[in-house]
Length: 315
Image 1: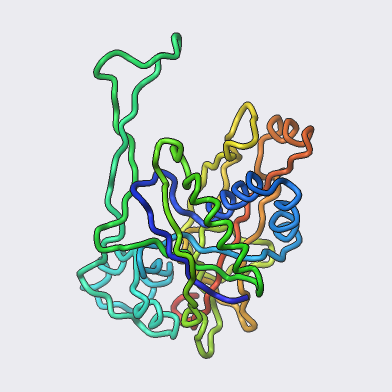
Image 2: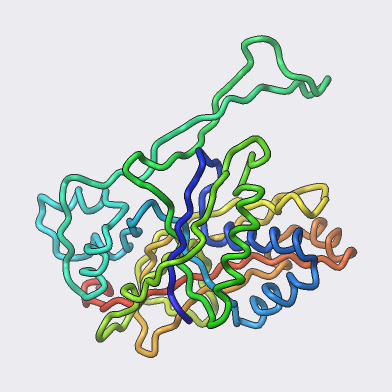
């Protein structure tokens, strides 16, 4: 698979985090709306279930920054740098390359700014009358903006030969509606550059015996377990296209980008797995969808880039 980078240019704030599994799911919904269920099954769902995804995506990252691998604090940092390293969320490409090569990257006190906080104003609804509340019942909810020094979001993709056109098509389709919650009122609007960059430098590592995930993902049964990671519980929802009584998925244990694992060569292009509908949905919702022949899945794949594993990572 070839590694490339797409540049996403947000038109403003967004609400839903640009996580890889969410993004791939929304691309699938965009394809279904534009081309129908048959093409969705042929192009995405069947390859996902068979373990041959046409592409695997990273989360979207600010500008050229990359997530700090979870193993970073385990290096032999001087005492005066340890707190700084623990606060480091992002690395420049040069710093990331140093860590991939098995070296200690130079960490400075000037941590890069990735995002800035925004807000959206909403109104309360009376549960009895289903009308807006009394005057003064407006409230703010969070939204996310790129920091001023970040010109775009970068999405990296491992893409099977010949599938680059499909990937660009799906991103352009999604850009017509927007990404995530409240897209209908202007949040999550974006454009995508018409061409992509090669990112072979991220996989050009001599002597690698480990890998770093660039995606929000869920490990698969054959993935390695000797590693470092940060995890969280994701409370996901189905997209708006299913027409069901409840949109809430079962909570899923997920790994954040920057999870890293020791694995002897040959190293994988990707890891993780697709979460089947039986694991994803409560029984009542599952039965409701199965009765209509619908079997949603969650593509929780990890885009893996190589790294040299240091002994202290396993101690």
